[in-house]
Amino acid sequence: MSFKMEPTPEICELAKVCRENSQIAPELFAEYDVKKGLRDVNGNGVRAGLTRISTIIAKEEKNGESIPCAGRLYYRGIDIRDLTSGFYNDGRFGFEETAYLILYGKLPTEEELKNFNEVLSDSRSLPKNFVRDIIMKAPSNDMMNTLARSVLTLYSYDKNSDDTSLENVMRQCLMLIAVFPMLSVYGYHAYNHYNKDKSLYIHRPDPALSTAENILRMLRPDMKYSQLEAQVLDMALVLHMDHGGGNNSTFTTHVISSSGTDTYSVMAAALGSLKGPKHGGANIKVVKMFHDIWKNVHDHKDENEVREYLKKILHKEAFDKAGLIYGFGHAIYSVSDPRALIFKQFVEKLAESKHKKAEYDLYAMIERLAPEVIAEERKMYKGVSVNVDFYSGFVYSMLELPLELYTPMFACARIVGWSAHRMEELINVDKIIRPAYIGIQELTEYVSLDKR
Image 1 (cartoon, helix red, strand yellow):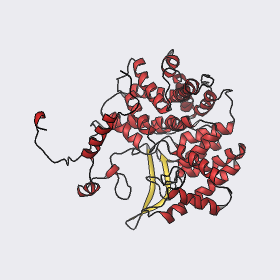
Image 2 (cartoon, one colour):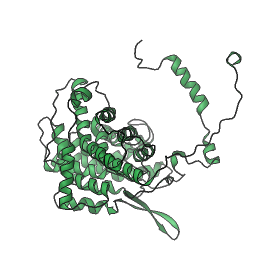
Image 3 (cartoon, helix red, strand yellow):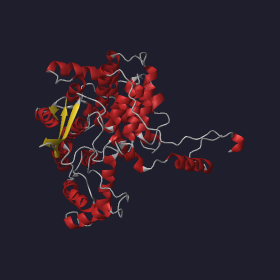
Image 4 (spheres, helix red, strand yellow):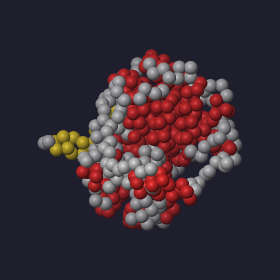
């Protein structure tokens, strides 16, 4: 028997039966007061937990009314704007310092940061022959699948894989934070070699370098990069590190951790969530949309022409005909996404160094025009602004990261937040997460097989 790659007619018929018998009338959600997607009609998430790790503020209470405000993001109570300007102005890379803050709840001293860097550096290695035996075999077209498979396989190499004591989970999490970049980049090189017939090279990380520097070192054939490139990638990792407990992959981390399972299973589940295009793939859509606009708009400085093309995208007449301008809007932010505002200033510097000023100017024009076009064409319950995905894809393209690594880069950052939330769940909650679902199927009698 061969491994079937496409659904057979019989399976398609079964899918039809499944669809017919599984549909739920939309009005029933309102009737039973069930929040679809765990969000109310205004898009606010149902409160499902408490966290100290990060805080998002998108509204302020004034005279008893909730008013949208400029978005603010806090890591362990520290404003992300102050945090990023602090390490950047001092000429330091911020990934490791921010990871320490998120994991342990306080900013490290110089000595603590030095020791933490050494722990990460010592953890930045894979089991013997792991690259050859696991990563190089059966490379996937999607690096997120490769990453998840590698994480699950690491379970087999861990003698204390099922130990959920805080000390052991912390060891596992620090190891995964350290090796995620290796698993991602090596997975891409295997795919690039075996699936696309390109040259193969595997560079070892340098223990003296930061996480961002090592990513660029391992990715590029000549291992070379500029200081600005490493700083911008480092900033991207910091800005993607955590975003409250309610985003899909972090909530997944809480749910799976509450069952008492092992760290590797938890992180593989989180990766599966992040792989979903509604969560982790938005910046890829932004880059593809931008290329489409660049190709089809004749004068990139003509605001009217750009505006009209954005309307075509909204009307499902252009690009992927989904009717979405990607990189705009957010489940929480309505006035502004603080991560996008921070990122933008570094994007411009990188664009100038890469001689991409014309592309940056078009991005900036779209950032300004798209909210106006969306407001004109769509009935909305809240404002819409540019989000962090709008510029991150542009940055990754300028850093010569392949599209296949965009979402894994997100994972290399978010693994820190997942780790902190996993430990927070284990420390504070001893109940398995089990929300209620209301059964609405009409009861019926069993009919014997010969009478159906």
